[in-house]
Figure: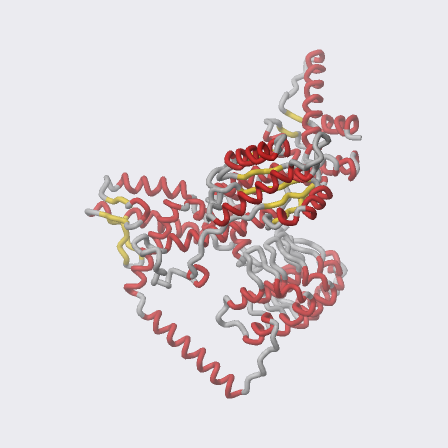
Length: 624
């Protein structure tokens, strides 16, 4: 559903208050648009006053606690779009817990307020509602203070509040006037630097194009986030080189773009003569910029970089291998956010390296700061993923997600190889301590450069009946020793990423008893039980993967209702994703039954089509 008339009226207010007296207003206030926004979200995005917010909350009281498609509450929208203090206060009074809610990018309302120049009164209310928010990071690793310090025009009072110190005294009129004079002088200096753009524009454009080329050569995956397919770019570049009959060529590594003769020169851009290869790159960037412009002018958080990236991946233009991998699994949005955050950090490091010409010595900082924003000015190395702990009931997708991470992290250049090695206690533990050490080292060597997935890791602390000594502890000690040695020798890029997995209660007891081992695993992810809707989606994906088609009467909604009706929560919790495997196995048998019956009745049956009665029969007969 697109914006309803009430969504549009909430962008004006006067007409909306008049409409609030109509009988249909209560129903209209609860309707969602295609982005999951209530009229309350739209009103908060357009700085609605207290009367408007109060009318919408009166019509739909639960609206204050309802997130949109990206997890933003109305409070997030109000903090981001600088809504009046009275409106924010009303939202907090109606749903105080809203100050503690994160959106799918890990941002609290205080993060939104800090990064969008909210007033000091709004920031103070959000801090008072949730003081711990001062120290919490979003998925980009930024605290509210980090976000506000990135804005040169941030209020000193807001900075003081986020630093936990009293705000400075209010300035006198003379001090305010001096402050305005300082800003005016700064603007004059900035305008003066903009006047001399002739030669600098030429140089910057060339360096930017060459930076894109270096990215395509060395870190092609980084171009996906910019909406450019590196494979298509490479094909276009190859075509331009063939058209030039060898007269225009790109030096390996993107150091410089050489050209000779009239065939090596392409058209001009704003008076700057470009080679054919440079034109190809520039056209790819311009094409991406044109396709990234919003069509409906909606302000609902579309400027957020995370949402812009999701919209780009949702389009049919660029096939992003990383996002395709993440889309192949259902649920676990917290892990997907972790991967996207790590991806952004990796791409920033790659972008910084690509912007520094190879002719610059490694010990020097690139002096052309016009191409290096503040976030890229610091000399930081590429990020590395931390070792992890996966906790969840059987069938919640722990090993499947770990296997996907191996491919994803390799695609991002975080892992050397897409290798995934799944082991358990018997693969690590021998009869003697020496055998255990040897087996553990062999497993680590086999998994080098990829992911080592230790399933049911808690069994390492269990003694066997034959021996009172716990041989699994020897494996743990050897893992700790080798992990620490890899860190000290700075060999993390080749050391495998270790993931411990197991059931919730057993893993909690294991980690509590192995505190020294636990310290090596910075990230812990819980895998919740699948809902009926998620199980239905997994079943649909599994059917298509196995080459089956589903009848039109079998969609996710119907399957979800059948699972809800024919199974119990306890039964599903014991199996989770395995429910889908059982269902597909049973459905195959039902298809075969229909084929056998059809031979006697001379009826055509599609052997690859699963119909509603197949699924119903399996659930009624076997899912008890």
